[in-house]
Image (tube, rainbow, N blue to C red; front, side, top):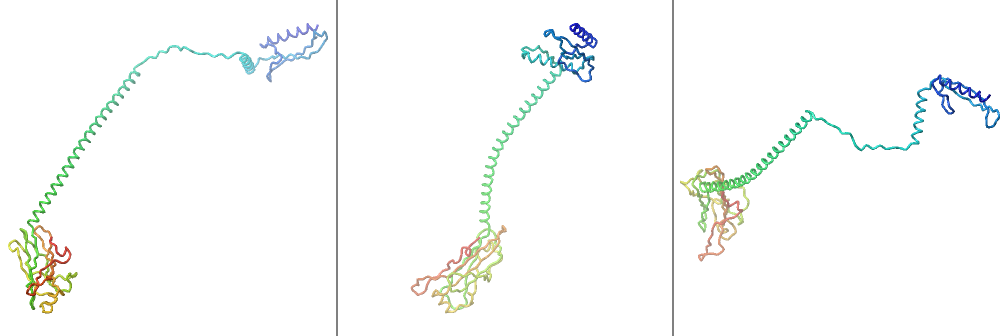
Length: 328
């Protein structure tokens, strides 16, 4: 009887499964919440033991269709389980299928444009190279011209120097040049008015225009002349000295600080205790407009050796700085 009841129960479960479209739930299957289920209890006898035993097993049959989620999960689980047991296989593609690429007018236009750009670039390179060569040639020509110009400048400077020297020679030959010459004294001097004679001589072919002048005679205790700011009286010469009157003679009357010489003064000069100084200058302008001057400073110097008659010879000697005896 128990066997018959178990068989009927199994048949009922199969009929119920066929009506719902799902196989009867097996032990371990999951059941989603909300799904209607049928619980059927069956008691059967264990044939092995031969005793009647209530196993208390509950067979669960799902009356509704299973959800997509449970089906997907079960399939994924089955697939994963199957793949874990299978070996991994590697697929290697050795040959690719042939590909055919067709070219149209755009490809030809691209290549033509690229060739045009390359030609323009080559033309620019050629033009730049030509410009560089032209610049190099210009640089070489400039160097040559610079050398020629330097030589020309040197020749011009030399010519200018030669011309300047020629002009100076011409001016020096033609310009007025005045020179002062002091005449010797009538020695031995006699008491009374003292007259010192001098002459101004013109050298040159043109006139000298006198601007200022001075001629001064003095008696001093020193052979060397002191610095004296007194420059008077003026010379007795005309304002213009030209080729028609090249030599002008003049006289200075009196020897400062006395106008007349006395015998003690003459004896002191003869003994070398006093000295007669004669100094002066003449400033003038030549026909070329250049200002010039002539300066002189002399002292009457006696010889230390006496003549047989007891007198001593004397002469005018230069004293002072080179500036005091200069001609420009």
